[in-house]
Amino acid sequence: MVDTIAAIATGQMVSAIGIIRMSGDDAITIADRTFKAYSGTRLCDARDRHMYYGELFDVDGNLIDIVLCMISRGPNSYTGENTAEFQCHGSPLVLSEALKTLFAHGARQALQGEFTKRAFLNGRMDLVQAEAVIDLIESETVSTAQNAAGQLRGAVGIKLETVYATLVDVMAHFHAVIDYPDEDIDEFKMQTYLSSLHHAKDELERLLATHERGKVMLKGIPTAIVGRPNTGKSSLLNALLGYDRAIVTDIPGTTRDTIEEKVMFGGVLLRLIDTAGLRQTDDVVEKLGVERTQLALSDAGLIILVFDGSEPLRDEDHQALDSIPEGIAKIAVINKSDLNAQLDADVLKQLGLDCIHISAKTGVGLDMLDQQIKKIFPELGTPVSGEIITNARQADAIMRSTDCTMAAIDSISSSVTPDAVVTDIEAALSAIGEITGKTMREDIISRIFERFCVGK
Image 1 (cartoon, helix red, strand yellow):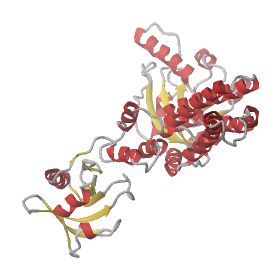
Image 2: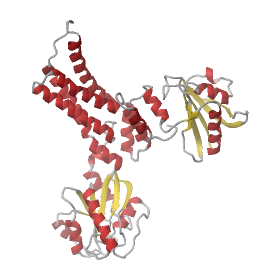
Image 3: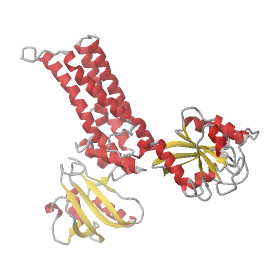
Image 4: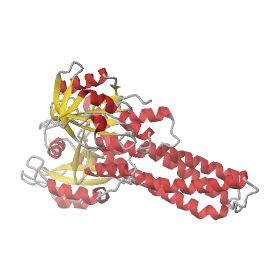
């Protein structure tokens, strides 16, 4: 018998609607004891996935709220079990009283992610789809939401299932020949499987290659805003964010530490890092800030190099330019276009820099910066269908499965005995099983669902 869990599925704040969910063998029975439909229909006789309007009562028969109730019988429900859901008015007090009533009738508090965990354990979704649920909830951009929705639909699982089936076919043929030598089974010839194994390896490599893009989609591009002191780096950060996050003054060295914030700009998620001005200084605190700026430069995926357009180029500007590591995408901006221009853009062109004129104070030119970022990262603005790997755990397992499949291919090419080849294929299958949940340990499963909120 499966115990019945209950939880508030919406936030703990005043809202228009608040939802309480139950799942387990007694979910419908408990709901029937607390809810009376105005139509007179008992929930034990109710139709699945139909809303019923009625009253919710506590254990003493006192009215808690007028609500909507819906039931779904297992296995055709989200969790694969009997479920009931109440849509109440969104008062935290009302939801708390309703939940206490369900506990009094035999339900218990659901743990974090327990509803989705039960859906996984009951075969309603694989582990990739389960992890996509929390990725969808935590999405910060349209592309990450689209990708998570595609994974929830099964985009990754379908590709992995094809690879899994290919490897199982090889295993099954090998074991059939070994276990049933007297049967009329075609001889196991490893060379005949080379093409299938190569196809499996290529599919795994294609999936793995998406992980770099996936990390950027999920975490954003680390973008360092650098330059000498007083070029307007902090003002640019504030302009991009749309509010005053960093302190702005005319005093050089105001920014002593790196400040990091996320913002959607240029169609991509940027992890903006406002840095201390790059210059030689004897100030101990400012010197630490410059060191942190250098560290931010080495980890950046994009650098916005800011020049002060109201002053001629200085030696410190050259030092800032020289500090940028090779191979990192950079955009040069000439700030303070609202003031009299003193910096000749042709001088910067001679240094190999095509500059954008902006005013962080007025916002002029930020649209040009937006377009430039889109040009640098065009692939991040394209629609996704769920085949981008954003999860490090999944990427690690795909890498191990790829390596094992490649080892099997190499073994066949080297005329190694079939049992050694099959050992590599078994390891590849096991790694894929870790992604979908077919071979996952219970402790790891529990750790995965700890990311979830209560009620999901």
